[in-house]
Length: 86
Image 1 (cartoon, rainbow, N blue to C red):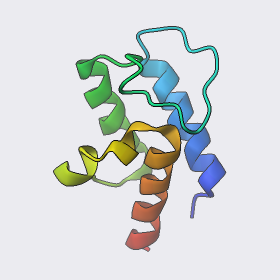
Image 2 (cartoon, helix red, strand yellow):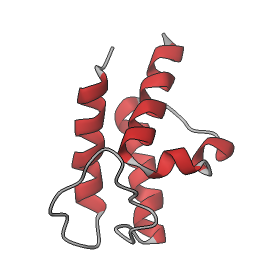
Image 3 (tube, rainbow, N blue to C red):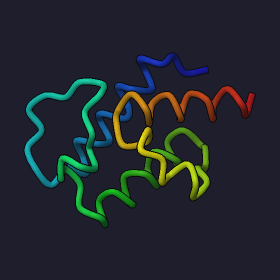
Image 4 (cartoon, helix red, strand yellow):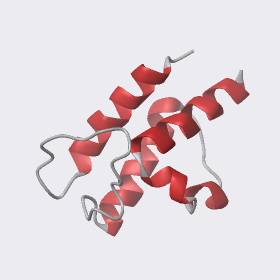
């Protein structure tokens, strides 16, 4: 099972790959959607890569949650999915 910090680090690494702006620093509450860091295509690609990397799938309802817009929220959701798969 992935540790929460490992999940967050991997999420940040993927986020950096898709960012349309230079990312100087982020904290766990950084909102990568409202900040404009990702355009709509980059956001979809980013989420797809997160799903592939962790071998999980998000539901449409999960993807529209505001909690999924931050590093901590997305990392927590990934961790929950990994745990539920068991």
